[in-house]
Image (cartoon, rainbow, N blue to C red; front, top):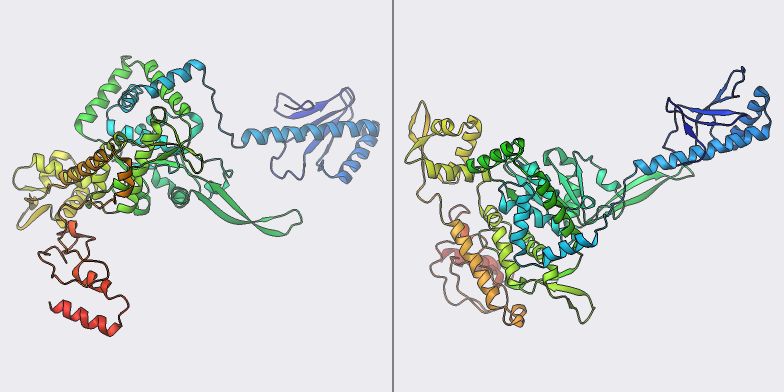
Length: 587
């Protein structure tokens, strides 16, 4: 607050003494700190003489000198008096502008200090047994109805903002299911200074944050479709943990020069979309959270809405649960997490993008360990002295349990909407059916339903009888192997990983020495050979080799006979390779 300027009833700034009154007309421009051009109205209080209006640059000494002489002559006031008044207005306007710039500038995170009682309660919550179960209960008490698995995924994803590799998530569902509600309710359990929520981002908005202003923050984007312009810098923040941009600016001499804008990450990004499928580069970097749109979930939400309007819901209890979880987040401190069981963790072979999916799984397990930091023994690296905590087999099991649906979705060739429709058809339609039968019962848009049926037919989950087409459309039947055993196969392979982790618990040295092998219980059998020596035994029972991705998905990624032979011939001439290739093809 400055000590020179006052504000009148019209909101104008003025400076008044018994000798002169100077009023700033039209306010003060905030841009251009190298100049201070204002419109002044100078008058003598109680004098009938007309006021003087002038538009000087108060930082221009020549302009100010001329103005002083003009005022002194026309108002018959001493020059020293006019100079002192002009100086007071200059200092007041300068201070006022700086204060306004501070108000409009981005405020730093306001960290709320915890009282001793709050810190003790949060510490007891983190140290008590069954932490994850009690956290899930508190999330339910905070006003999140159902979605138990999804709300825990989002909670630990947001908790990972303090980890070395923060996670990101995308909530996917049709309009009106509650994507934004779930995201906002989980975000309400995070400290206010740890998240940034914006309706829309411009293309270059991310590059003009301060260098470390967004490090370790949570970005909440209600609609990813409206943030297409910033998805590229978001991906770079997720992968490289920093973004940079080169721009040209004009220096004080008027010359153009190049500067680099650098913003440091990492960040955690939580977004929502109604799209059935997400752009691959965005999906590979995020956990895909598919919301529950079942009738049972609809009924639970409507019961909650009726109870809230009837005053039957204790809103104070919801706020207490949110406040407790916020205090818990403030008690957590950044610490390194070491996962000694990482060499034993492998993904099911059905996962399409195993490299990034494995990274997401390991980061999620790390977030669970980080959340249990008060229940883990702190150790120090003998070489560097860095303090760290270690992952336990329980953390690994909890990570697989919460991400089992995510691993299935990343292994499924169908979109989430198509998979849900297929499951509904298999449960409710016996025998043949038509598209009109489905539309009557689900009240689905014809074009949307036709697109789903076409996708299911193309992948072989539905059989279309074109000979029985009539006025109601084609007749469909569910293929005999449509439901398959993909969930059971994934569950069995996850059990193998957990069993390895459990068996290695007694001897930590075994964990580091043992090599993690990909899980493939039904892979195409390929004869083993010693490195550098040609195969002597022919490959037997390799019916899966050469199948398409749809028919033999479990064999995708397995080396074929030709691949192995070609690898053995590294260094041979092109003619020798062609001759051997022709012999192999003939065999």
